[in-house]
Image 1 (cartoon, rainbow, N blue to C red):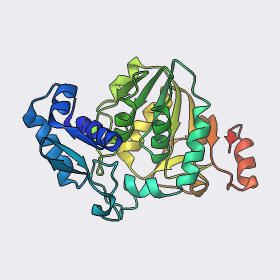
Image 2: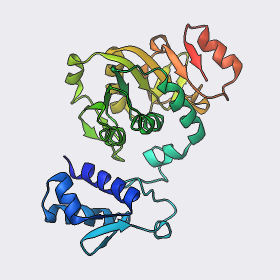
Image 3: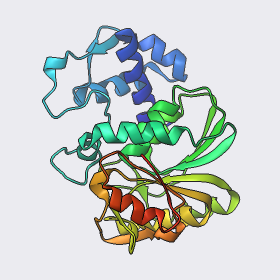
Length: 269
């Protein structure tokens, strides 16, 4: 297990129980006391916990700056419009709505792909609390760390180069894994979507990976909130012809919905 995985689980434990001891960390992860103390030290340096004699507790809410996130181990810049933290805060209500709708498409013992987007992350948090046998393939680091806690879910993580805000991997270094996988449903989002360009995104390296996902999936479901329609970004990874269903919110104009339906794309809101 990577240190970052342990640290996320340690943080979750402290959030739930208020504290953790060095001995508990050693026993749970089968690591030395030195490793346990190093994990707690790194979390404290990120202002997420306070070390105590023989363990650690959660920092008080007032000790965080207004931009920090107690759930976030990775340091993110919330002033960067492309950062995971910034995107997570945008259209949050719509993303929760879309995530809830998307869950109804997932069958027990199925295989799905979740990209690294914040809507997929909202789905992952809901899936983590469900009792459903699933195989989830993802290149989203936050999504992987959220789902590995559920014993009913087998997580297959696609390796590659870690993105700038440590929320995902990019590139095709791990693309060979898809030769051995059959994906029932791919849940994908992007920076924008149009009929002409399909789903587009700003990172050409992540786009390259998503193109491979589309090719290896039986069905593609686009998770697109109303702010992303008629928006085009740097590169396209999925044409509108390859989208089976769009899940969105109720703020999309009826004319836009009808335009996509005329292309035989199911639109759910």
